[in-house]
Image (cartoon, rainbow, N blue to C red; front, top):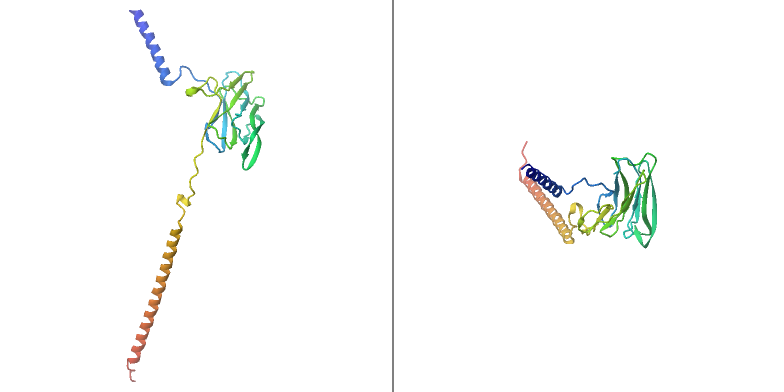
Length: 247
């Protein structure tokens, strides 16, 4: 009887664990990895992005980060923001056909960015660091995959280079992915506050209304003037007819 109860308890515990895994989606804490933030942008636009680097080691610091730009999606303009305690090296490559940026044809594009920490400036255990960049115009592709190498002070290298898997499952060592949406078609030009531009016939109607108003005022003024003359004549004739009082 006791053995039966124990088996029932073990079965219940296993069932509870399976339910928890199904509900929460994991059986153990998921490991953090390097990401690009924001993770969505628009094709053809410019944006500020940051490569976010968490430190997963309990004993070593992150001392170097290498971000490789995708060859099938070159970006014409890439600039970095200074990160205190870190230096950055920019590697470029030839591109053919050239990239057009503001009317200029560029024959080179950034191939890799490498950030290196000064002594005692690495990302320590339990911390993370962001490495901001500005990029654009963003290429006409659906995704940009930035394969990344994270080097620790003890010599270990974490290779975040796995591309997304079919079905949306996360690979073991996922590379940072930037999803690009097609730009919305430009809307027809409108006037202030979204009002449509005035039509030509509207202007003609306004001119006609203005002309009619001016004519009406002129006629009214003429009638008033004639009326004043008539009243003045009547008053004058009346004074002529009244006898002059004797002394």
